[in-house]
Image 1 (cartoon, rainbow, N blue to C red):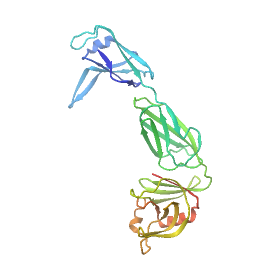
Image 2 (image 1 turned 180 degrees about the horizontal axis):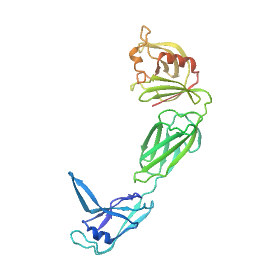
Image 3 (image 1 turned 30 degrees about the vertical axis):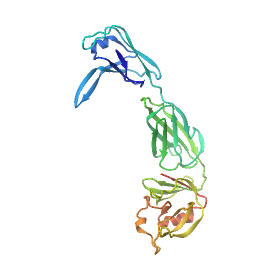
Image 4 (image 1 turned 90 degrees about the horizontal axis):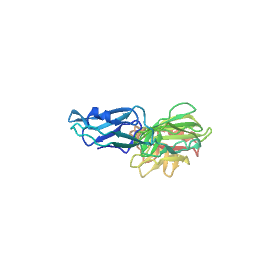
Length: 323
């Protein structure tokens, strides 16, 4: 008696076949009729550092791939001999079905979508569980790849960019993926274009391994600065904000420190200089933390950068904060 030990077989195989007793190699090759020519080999195992061959478990690998989502049959003719000398009296059939190819059922953004926000994830939703995937995003203007990370979550694949996309730019996102049944997705791509900001200032604040703020005017980098966002116990809010009112200096009795050149983002979350002590001197131990999480939720800058920001970035400027 024999059977296939799998639900859905990859189109490239192998098909695992198990018998209730070890079978004779030469007898099996005379008795088996395969749906597609291929190799039939016994399973080789290693136990406690010793290798041996299990002649009750076999693997059938086709010379060319099976068709997807198709049922095949392996015929075992009467006369098959076991290694113990018993003989199969009747004819047997082993049926197996191959796995479906994965398909993309939706994307966000949609293919061809316009005015996409400058910082957002790109998501592909597929019709089945995915075991591995890679997303490559390319700027069609510059022909360069966008740095970022690909995350696989069962039936979805998410690309998280390391930095904001540039405005008024076409991008191509290419997905390569393999299903839990080891079936490869036919290469899939979408294109989209981002918001057009004209020649306006906007700011990308990355609170990653190193905290940075990059000021753009349109698509051109104007200034890149090390900053410090909030500590884990007082995180900086993430999202899209717009600069509001501003002032030359403030003092916080609660924290016993002050700062210069503050610009409000939302509520009590400000962009300002590294804190100053009661003598109005920069706290050097805090200045040394620029690039690392150190604040109570605000965005800290070196004083010369905070002064430049205060004097050059107009009210209503978009500031994107992300990890």
